[in-house]
Image (cartoon, rainbow, N blue to C red):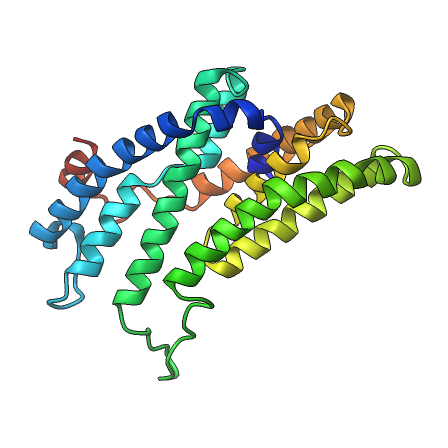
Length: 255
């Protein structure tokens, strides 16, 4: 939902102008931490608590990708709080972060293709990914292309109908949230994180001038003041900085 709001704030025409710069920034931002993280994990597996046998490559790749992937919701929240999301630098950061996340999730799909299916407690092989690597890449590009072309036109035509035939603001809010959740579920199904689908849905719907400024503000206030704090609090509740804390590993990663 936080990425839905961020997507609705994106000016698509400005974001598209950042194409080459966003790709360059994204690749530069991924390459160095990926190389350093994977090299350290491969050379010093014991420090990273590796106990999976001799096949270090998938583990090293996992650590490298984990260190290079972007926290897209956190970036979006920071830019919104600083009122920089609609600026040129804000559009560049979000575009680069989106590409960064896409690279990261495709990288995780590669890792899944390298390792054998896990065996659960019952001794049966776990279910394989829904689609393969090429399927994930192809469906992701297809999803982005359709949402930013046919999807934009569809929302532009449907939003006036929704606003006329439903009570305000409940009808529009319900429509926007249902579309975001459907897109999130779709990207989760094809192997890309759900936040990516919600973000693209926000971009496609937010590009329509039929989505009134008052409606946008209601959605923004509703999500950022209720769901965003719950999201960040849930992250804090799930972190234990004491159990298993390794100061040398922390310093190694941060350096």
